[in-house]
Amino acid sequence: MASNKPKGRARKARFAGVPHAIMESDNYRHLNGWDVKLLLELVKQHNGSNNGDLSAAWGMMKNQGWRSSGTLFKSLAKLERLGFIERTRQGGKHQCNLFAITWYPIDECKGKHEVRATSTPSNRWKQPAPD
Image 1: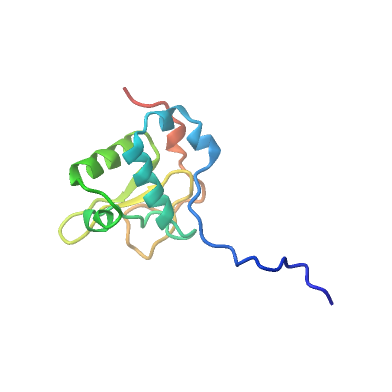
Image 2: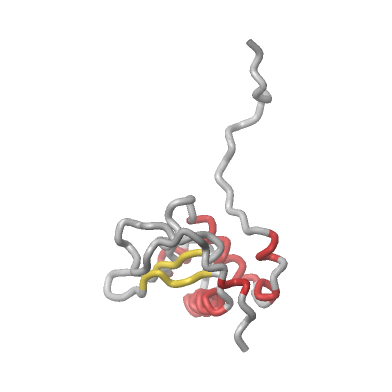
């Protein structure tokens, strides 16, 4: 029996996608290049079952081309303020902050974060940007 699978095509690779509705939103237009880079870094970490367990710790981001912790923290604050991410764990001694992407529901992450898992996304990015 003949196979319908096209020859010469590799298996599907993982990808980091941002929905068009988000990229066309008013809040997205407020983002600069570093903000978008950070958002994509967080989206890249999402594997479909770990939303809420995404990290932007300086040690990790430094290896991704970030040159300034100040820029990183400003971008994190801006992404939170504009509703693209939400904090699921406040970092402290020997623990980093954890985040969730707001266009996906928050997943149960084996007690790693401080918020309950959700069945629907919060979609905070749809709210008007605060002044």
